[in-house]
Image 1 (cartoon, one colour):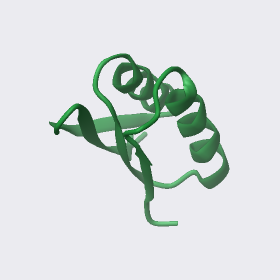
Image 2: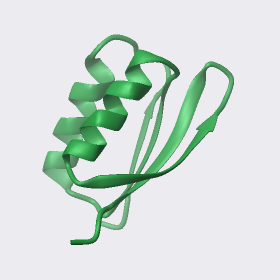
Image 3: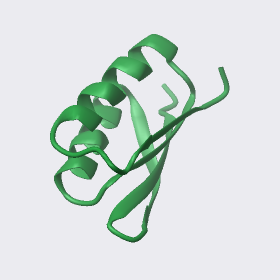
Image 4: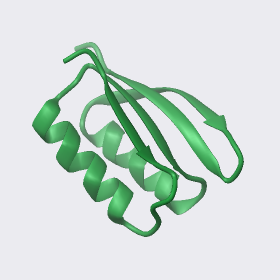
Length: 75
């Protein structure tokens, strides 16, 4: 698997973070691209990615949501 792309900009609450964790645990891709609502969902997904060993490369603010890209940290 080369990358994982998650489009969750319509989802609120804790679901984006829980969904992100489950998908990454199953697929374990080296790169992740995620679209999430700005605010709490974005912060929670950021924490999940970092806890799973990913480094956030960029966060691009869009119209009420954030496009973030992350790569697995090198050991």
